[in-house]
Image 1 (tube, rainbow, N blue to C red):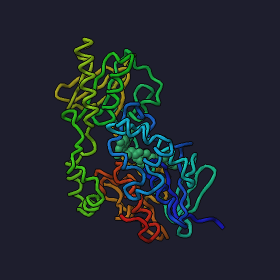
Image 2: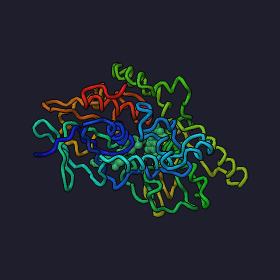
Image 3: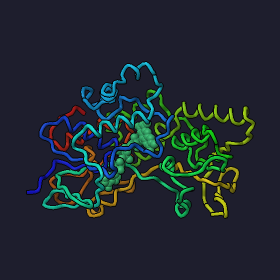
Image 4: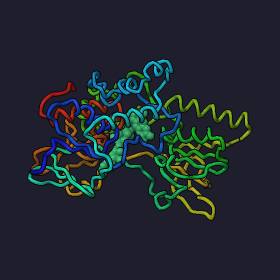
Length: 406
Ligand SMILES: Cc1cc2nc3c(=O)[nH]c(=O)nc-3n(C[C@H](O)[C@H](O)[C@H](O)COP(=O)(O)OP(=O)(O)OC[C@H]3O[C@@H](n4cnc5c(N)ncnc54)[C@H](O)[C@@H]3O)c2cc1C
């Protein structure tokens, strides 16, 4: 007889890793976690050496729901014998490279994770879900989607994607020559800022950097206490209960609670610009174009010419174009059989109070969605802040009782 898991989770980034960590403590729960990569990697193309977490490390996989869990960030530091040195180092924010090590450690320690499994389809058989990949399949009563977000590339740039025109998520993965070249960064959010800072600090920096953003300026992330309440479970529930039009308005108002640039990065960039332009005499080396949008791109015999609309319309010539243009949620292709049965609105998928999708027709279990419902759950949805809480809500729903206090 085919074994039927209580749930199968697809994708093991921080979201489903949190589910695996919290699920590992639960007696008689059978879950399997399937990840396409051969080992855990947290946005490897943007794992810049100086990049830090934008949140407290206590917003790890488990702590805010189960502070006694053996999968906490502190447990990782203790297991690595680093607790005293970590405390003494007094980092203002934890380095992302260290958080990545923590995620890798957790993914090696939790037994129910299978790497090298890229799910290709999900269908239904006798009320259960069957997940298939190249050389295998599993059957489960519930499915938890945790495949992350997809890089967004503006339509005018899509035909030009290549080794020298690429999304920010590929920044460290591309073999490319940047020294003494004209580099353009498109996008004024955190990723764009981190890349600009990195370019400015290269031992052999670019000849020039053009930084183009639609935003009115380089706007800081609002990390103040009352704004941070948007990242509380209580607020997320309140937001979820609002009519769709109110949610849309609030999302626009709250954008910079998560989409701004952190203050330390802004200060670094300001100082680097001062050093290059005032001390090293590189006038206009970093050219910032705000309220500006890339509308077209033309291939030249050497490089590219970007058509920029803004207060001063311009043609910008570049050797390398880096698109820090963000991410969007797309239902994964492997959901094509079930997709027509999922309820949607103009804003996106209908996502219930337990993060399950509204699926038409008979099924014993449900399909849950991690990190795909900003429209329904607010600015905290793609963030680490509510990671453990959301996983606990999903686990409680799968178990049918309140295992975790949510
Ligand atoms: C560079 C960067 C830095 C960030 N830093 C912060 C931060 O400091 N603080 C914060 O709160 N938020 C941060 N975020 C936002 C958010 O926390 C992260 O994007 C986080 O990684 C989201 O986790 P996830 O598990 O939903 O998705 P992902 O981390 O994208 O993981 C999805 C996983 O699914 C796998 N997968 C996809 N398709 C399949 C398939 N068919 N079969 C099997 N596996 C599949 C992928 O290989 C991947 O491993 C950051 C985002 C980025 C891009």
